Length: 304
Image (tube, rainbow, N blue to C red; front, side):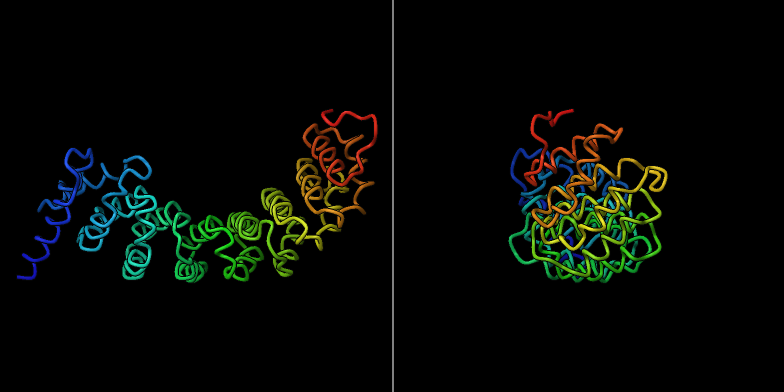
């Protein structure tokens, strides 16, 4: 009886599809008794256009929750990302499913879908933030979780201490993602002294991408990251041979321009970059920063 009831529920979910919907056959295929047919249907839904499956978000969630095949669940977890705002309304239900799921690739695909639908939700993101913070120590899921926290923006602010810990960790790719996410979460917001200090320290990271993303994150944070001005100025003044990357100068110059009056002590270094740095991007970034600080030399062309 229980199996019959479950099958009827699936058929009912499929029958709610709108007549003439291009996804109708695929959704109906998810109720097929054979795994190959369900897998083919799920793969078709995975390839749907973004937000195209919005009218069928509830049906997809039901199929995902009841699907016995790992491979089919894997495809459906990805397809959930194509439901847009309608899928965002189901986040609590999907989070509960994620916690029950044991297969790594299913969870990875669901995290990918969260990144697409979660920013569209109108409800607070605390349950999702807590879930993601709990995944940060995991070797694979943790890397996916770092990026998703950044996609949530200011709503993920409770995750900042955990991201600071990742930024200080051993994995360079995770440090890059943590720097990017901190910039997105703290952009133009209130100061977070620990995050600003960690990003300033990361300007001296051994890995080029970490240094660059740390500078960009500080610039996105803006005046609330004023404590990092000395570190940005020091990065600006390092010789190319010391940094092994001239482009860091450009990112540091841009970030200083976003700091407001707190960056005025860096004006002499910015002028030197504008006048003599061999990199065109750095010269333009320095010129833009000087203009923002009201210190651009008269009679000069900012585009040179």
